[in-house]
Image 1 (cartoon, rainbow, N blue to C red):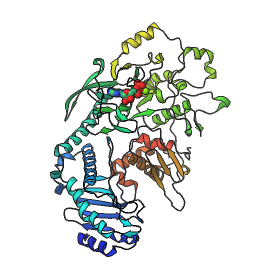
Image 2 (image 1 turned 90 degrees about the vertical axis):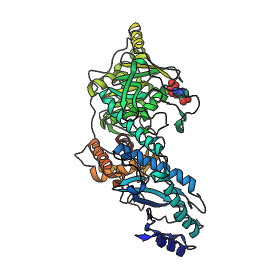
Image 3 (image 1 turned 180 degrees about the vertical axis):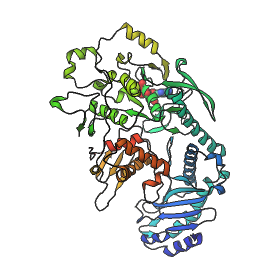
Image 4 (image 1 turned 90 degrees about the horizontal axis):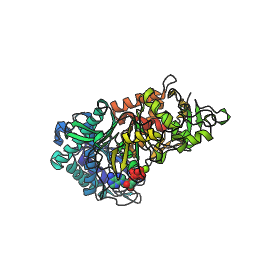
Length: 568
Ligand code: ADP
Ligand code: MG
């Protein structure tokens, strides 16, 4: 390890030289309270910025041990520090100056969710913070004085202002960690209370806009649980909390247009993740294996058994091993369900807004006009109960447009001016009064969920001269070799750093766990186990700080959407 004076000397020496001379600052320097590690130096001012780490003994930071003594607390604690570091950058960094990324300092932080990420880690007894620096240049000429300012003034101030217990909001960090732990406990309590989701009293569900996930500021109506669905939980930090419990089984969310149905469902979907205090949904939790399902016409499907829903296609097309390069609304929705079940979904969440109508319902008149033999689709209404009876998979469904679901629902919630009412009783009475004469087309059983074994030829990560080239382009696209994977319809993917991790996890899977005798699910579970055990770092031979943990459903979902996927 060098001293900080060594770094100062090198920078003074290369001042005014060509950009490539920056390579000399790569290394490990003792800055007194912390170590500065420059891992990778960018080749030019426009390239991805240089990767830098700061390490210091946890003991020196002064943070009480109980803030990071459990996995969930450690994740939340590191999440908080990344946010503090980010704020300190905004306060102390002089920001962009010069060409390209010159002068930029940045750290990967989360949005409303608290995810496991590798920007801030506790590694043994050390705290490690990973961030990037755009090494400053004018044209391609090194600006040594600016670089000295970054390493000797700005970064020390940022570190000092964010990584020590004495310098941050102590109640704030504790609250962040406690709230995350409470959410984890709530999620564990769901099972014993027979619930799939819990929405606490007072939760604020609406967001600022479709592109701004922060809570609506003005005029948001906090949730009031209907007494029929009221449930209490005892939490380690917050204590007793009351809310609306959504039981296992089939739950229908009905109500007039614009009364808050989709807003409620979206909050439930996001309840698979922990949220930051102040989000409004920090006491909304959902079963970890809950998957949003929607129609996705145009997607590719590779040998998925969609026969529980689709049979007798024209020209005898196979639906037990159904493949297409251009799925219809209904076949895509059927495949999305079967693929989710294949990797272990326990709850399906469906919104009529994003569903194929002919997949959801088929009324008695249509049954008479288009006889069963001429209709390949068995509508979801005829399968939803069997899904629960045979496989134990619950469904939460937003449906304002058809009362055909009254018969099959265990619980009916009506959204009325943004408030949920429990109307199960009325719905059942109406179903009896106006008995539907439609025929159940669902057969005796749900049908089989067939597991598949991907072939290694599906996964070619090479592009041009590079043997492995995998990038995320925004939140919703992965470039895997020359294959572009479109994740636009994986609605529970929330963070671009998850997208990056998914690309790498696909590669890790194909290198390590893809085997002729192993199903997609078995392989994926091994990948998830490794990443949970060894951390996101096991995905790359060098250290980066911009990965966040995805769920198995989104990783498998990405594989299922690869246009190159081939299964046995
Ligand atoms: P629906 O699916 O029933 O048609 P949405 O969930 O799309 O209705 O909600 C309609 C509008 O109402 C949205 O703009 C949403 O942000 C807003 N909204 C939903 N819930 C609330 C609430 N609790 N307080 C204030 N506004 C809300
Ligand atoms: Mg809606």
